Image 1 (cartoon, rainbow, N blue to C red):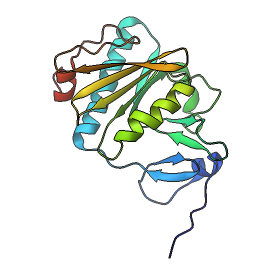
Image 2 (cartoon, rainbow, N blue to C red):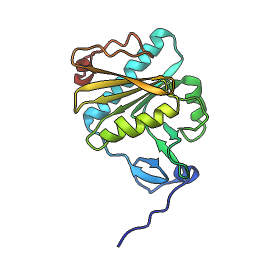
Image 3 (tube, rainbow, N blue to C red):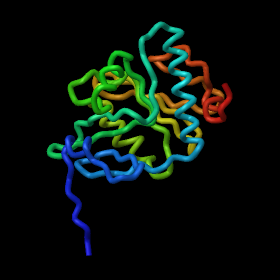
Image 4 (cartoon, one colour):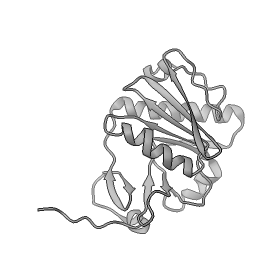
Length: 195
């Protein structure tokens, strides 16, 4: 016997609670539980937040990096809403202050994040490389990173005329970011926690 699942609107999603600590993305109106990442997954996110904040401070940008706390509404689907929750995102501090007084979702029409990052896990590989790449480009997010500990590489997607150009970095190659041009780490240093 199948279970009928009611599709949720954005309002339903923002008010949803199942009395657990499970975090959900909303994809075409359906709740999709976000799997627990490994400790390494969380550590990569934490390290990136620290590095991005240091680089923002050093360069004088009024940006803040956040780990898995802000959703991004996607234009995916014509009838049902989609909200993604990136592993890490960077946005202007003023925008973050505004979100502190409402549901932390960047809605369609709002200024996009400066940069988003997804850390690949076995269950998210195709979603991170394909679906989210497409959705984030339509949202005009200038830079999107996919950190792939499984393949030991970092892919930096840079928005150009509505499409993402990609640069793949591996091993001892320093990660080149248009947003953070002096980002100091190689792929090996980032993945192995060498700062």
